[in-house]
Amino acid sequence: GLKVGVLGAGQLGRMMALEGIPLGMQFAFYDTSGTPSAGLGKIYSDPDNSLAPLNDFIADVDVVTYEFEHLPLDLASQVADAKPLYPGVKALRICQNRVLEKQTFDELNIPTAPFRVVDSQADLEQAVSELGLPCVLKSTTEGYDGKGQAVLRDAANIADVWLSLGERQLIAEAFIPFQRELSIIAVRAEDGATATYPLMENIHSEGILRYTLAPAPDCSSETFVRASDYAERLLNHLDYVGVLALELFEVNGALMANEMAPRVHNSGHWTQNGAHTSQFENHLRAISGLPLGDTGAIGVSCMVNLIGREADTAAVLTLADTHLHLYGKSERPGRKVGHINIVASDYAELLKKLKLCLPHVPEHPAFSSSLISLP
Ligand code: ATP
Ligand code: MG
Ligand code: MG
Image (tube, rainbow, N blue to C red; front, side, top):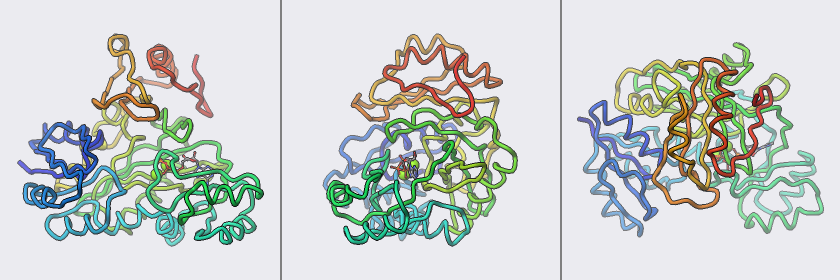
């Protein structure tokens, strides 16, 4: 069987392997964190970046993908020189840098928040005078789960916020008063075929995704067509192979791109139980030259992230159509340790099932979709 190499050994690589093994694939993981959780294939551990394990890993696999976009570009290029790397270095380079990412949205006529590149406190003052307040400041590289970000509401705080974000390059964005956050996941095969999952609604708390509803309730077909058109423009522009996630703001019926991720995405975890083909399987199909699978939803789903603490396993397992996924990671505040997928035939039934499930999820934030609420 084909041997897939994954750069990274966290839950996303693990969930890929869980879907690839039935297709006859084997897996190997390259880990620099020292705390791999994948465990479904050989782990090439390289906490000191000594690179000998990287060469052994490359030699061992047929095709390479990654579960995290913040990996050094020279490492990615070294891999790509030896084995097919999907998504490729071009997509990785753009997706790991918020400035290149926003410029790409502009270039492809995908609406996005107005932004300025900030390299100094003087730049920040200038950006604030041009964009107005509030504005959102993000480190150009390396952020996730809202880390390395701040919302600036008062010009008196410019010096403090510049210091607190580490005096590094930032992107300043106009604050978008969106009604809700959506995302779309699309996949492109080696031969250029594409497929798109339904739009999803994402509910965050403290910068971390907490709930995804799929398909997003009350989305017009125009909105879906627009979102999938944006995703497709990106896939083609980036010569993309694999799964791409695009995060969007819905503002007065229009869509604005927030950011994209060149990988399987937390907002697509519901597809494990709620779609005909999961995002993990479709990613693997794409990178190994296989035909793409049906991206359609089976009913409606809610994904509940387990943040910091696991759920009451025995209690959750008594609930109908409620699927527990644990990552085997130790509990730590703010850490993604698992998720629950709930599937139903309509939103009313979904919300009833969610209401039964939530008491078993410690410290969950209130479920607050803009359009539907718990019974
Ligand atoms: P992720 O974990 O999704 O990768 P991230 O750290 O890369 O997150 P973003 O997605 O860029 O960060 O921003 C985090 C959240 O901050 C968004 O989901 C949204 O709620 C809010 N946000 C980001 N940019 C803006 C903006 N321009 N206007 C209003 N809110 C914003
Ligand atoms: Mg991000
Ligand atoms: Mg985001």
